[in-house]
Length: 333
Ligand code: PMP
Image: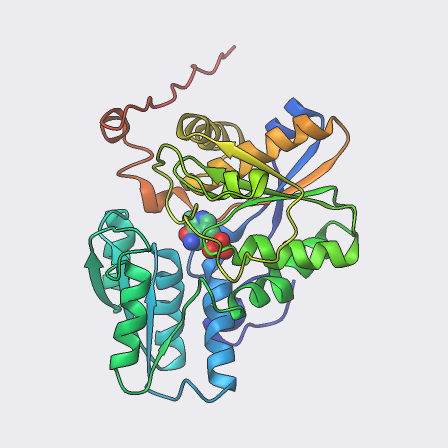
């Protein structure tokens, strides 16, 4: 247990590594989840947001009272909004209107200026990421966080998430599995672990609708289908992901991801967001590929609260052709 944290920024990180009991028993492997939902802003993106702000402060680009602009699926914006309050900046967030109402509402509650925009592909100049870059360029003294291609993002994970995992595992890790949005988490941790132990297998997890599974397995960016998960998958290879080690890749569909997060709730007591379903299901598949006796680490990116009206709502799921998993009654007596 550390000493007193100096404010929000120092409370970021130092998250538990949780053994997922039921899935570990099922696979004969040890499946461990880094509890990033326990960050003070509620997601893995607090680390990237902090790293990006600290580098911008150190370079002199970000000055007191300045504005931080970002295009985000939500969690980076939420981390930035907290940190901007704590460190004395204004946050301007551009977010696709397809993201959950919980995340958009939370951003507004935190005091960020929020611009919701139609979800259009990256190739379109009005894509939320590209638009956020243009807005930043128009505001004097504003900084564009640029999480997708700003390597401060993955450095934050290389310098904090990865060494924490390495220490918590005492260096005994057989595989690292994670989905990527910007690629910051996956790449930062993969690069660190490979330096420590070349044999650690780095596995990229991907939802349907993303081109990264195809890119990782065949070199060709090609997407099929779609996904209700938020914050992961991509149609392009970001600077954060470009030179990351990838030994294997696993694609998980929404129904399997849903089954996984409901199992986590019922069996582990963990109330998780959709990307966790992709990560943990891919960790289970990796366990199958490696065989029993291995230790596999993945990341529990955010909590279920942000998706209650979607992933945990039967009608919303049914409207997308998905079935809400049904819980079997506990047998008593
Ligand atoms: N899961 C969720 C819920 C996210 O918001 C994000 C960030 N977009 C990720 C996973 C992926 O993290 P990264 O950007 O580091 O690849």
